[in-house]
Amino acid sequence: MAQVDPPTYDIIIFGASGFTGKYVVRETLKFLNTPNSPLKTLALAGRNPSKLTEALKWANPSHVNIPIITADISDPMSLKHMASKAKIILNCVGPFHLYGESVVSACVEAGCDYLDICGEPEFMEKIEAGLYDKAVENGSLVVSACGFDYVPAELGLMFNSRQWVSPAVPNQVEAYLSLESDKKMSLNYGTLESALLWMANADNLAEFRRSRPYKTPPQIPGSAPPKGLTIEHQKKVGLWGVTFPSADASVVQRTLSILADNPSGLQGVNEDPKQAEKRGAFWSTIKPAHFGVKVATKNLLALFGFITIGLSVVLLGRFSFGRWLLLTFPSVFSFGVFKKGGPTEEQVNSASFKMWFVGKGFSDFNLASQGNEKPDTEIITRVMGPEIGYLTTPIILVQCSLILLKQRQDLPKGGAFLLE
Ligand SMILES: NC(=O)c1ccc[n+]([C@@H]2O[C@H](COP(=O)([O-])OP(=O)(O)OC[C@H]3O[C@@H](n4cnc5c(N)ncnc54)[C@H](OP(=O)(O)O)[C@@H]3O)[C@@H](O)[C@H]2O)c1
Image (tube, rainbow, N blue to C red):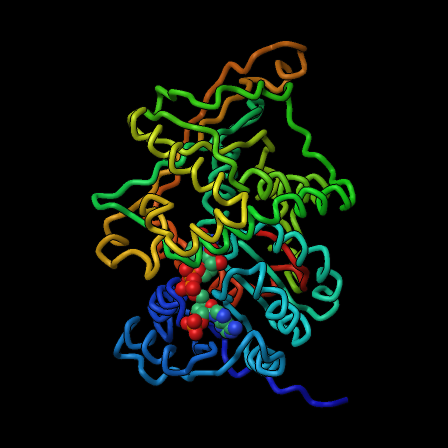
């Protein structure tokens, strides 16, 4: 049997020269060869070595000796070479709809693990459908959406659901996302490109979902809550919220379906019996609930401002001319929400988010089965963090990669997953 060389690097950051990529580099370097960190070796990859060198200098000038690997989406051999050198690829090259599949394929072929910061449901679901079996066979763990999309929503729901101590059960959890900043905050052009591709392909996604096998629905006590108001004043947290068509809800729903099929979670590739027991005990505390997201602000006027901007981006995003306008003059047509060159460091550092999870349910499970009984208990929890795109997203991605390095034996052998 041919000898396979062990990977040279614990982590390779692909797309390290991108706006988000360079923040991921900065966050990763905080853990390189620090006490107790499993991260010992790191390389950066991308199509332009001099841009990668610049990104490294920007991220931390004292780390100039990090190796640089040239890899380009248009050159499959370069992707194959990159994947053969890594335990884990952190993919920051977007839009994933255009560039993601060849990177995942290279990782699955090489049997290395893959994490990304994708927020595009169509890409994630197609990868999961198309590459799951091969990834299991080759021992490659492919996990998409390890960023602000969709980790705070998913962990927030789980945290809220674990506060319901038996016999209490949740029925519905609504998340209120509030973005805060002293300065006018914006997102980089790369996120706009990805969001527009998502909008342009929304019909394909709906059709693709219809073609997929039926998923086990989670068993949620009580009847499904009424649709509720689109605009709502949530007095307990002092916020006005408007229903937000985010993919958070579908990702959460998918995780709850997997949990319905695997009540003890997913088996680790080489876990010991103690870990298996711990895993089962943890997942048994997660109680499923109906889930939705609202964007929220403290005053109603600001909420109307948000709705106006959101509607105009969505309306323009439906037509190719509108998309052209948005991509050519992003600041003008998105009212400054998206900007070529992205926000300044000062803007990034001044921003933060709070996500309130308002859970409604029953003080006793038996009440839920009594026909029209309304929820009689409320539990409110909160997830908060720094700026969403360039601080929280790198923190989440890097923490996921450190868990993978440290506890690979406790995670599935392989497969393609959205986060769970
Ligand atoms: N999950 C979240 O919450 C979250 C947060 C932030 C960003 N994102 C996503 O991350 C992605 C990147 O966003 P961004 O703002 O960082 O975009 P960006 O600044 O445009 O970065 C794109 C990166 O892709 C690289 N690239 C493009 N074409 C390539 C090719 N043919 N071969 C190799 N590399 C190539 C670019 O390389 P060059 O530098 O050489 O041009 C750059 O490094 C987007 O999809 C965005 O939606 C998600």
